[in-house]
Image: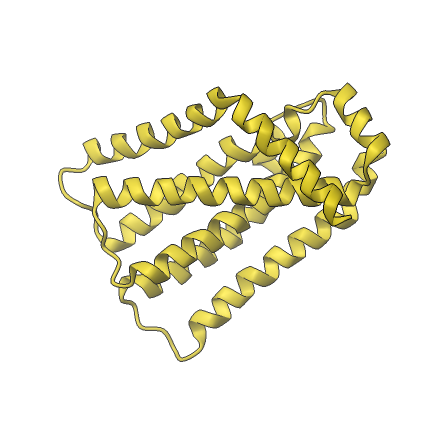
Length: 219
């Protein structure tokens, strides 16, 4: 099973390397959006505004990054995968690939934010860890939404419609957790409770994907 998941993951990586125009298109989107924010603000924003802007940008970056995960798979290719692998292996490989890709995009976004909009955090290492956790959380949700939307006549708009109610509590938790890296004082253990809650939601999303995707797979 692990070998087949690794093979599927390698396939997604090779496709991404061959279709570099999509990867560079996302990078251009990230750079252009952050540069517009830089031009629109005469001074570096305060920490709360900086934090809110960062996570809102991450939300839209994830939609653009993960949306193509299933929408680019043709019906013939999906039929081929149906004959050589199981639905659990397929969805797990997609979850891993999108998590890695989104964590990379989050790191690039963070670097551009630090370069153009300053670094208001008091604990950069902690904030980097929160960004990686948040990027993986958002990608897991939208990967599942992409799988559902792909079965609805390839309607990409469904990804945002279905994902918004699910991603909103995660996004609010991430914004709250990020404040720990900006000098806000939390009760003892509160930071780990928030991080554990987000990790628990990630596990729940993975479980839902593993349970629900086989039913989509049969369609």
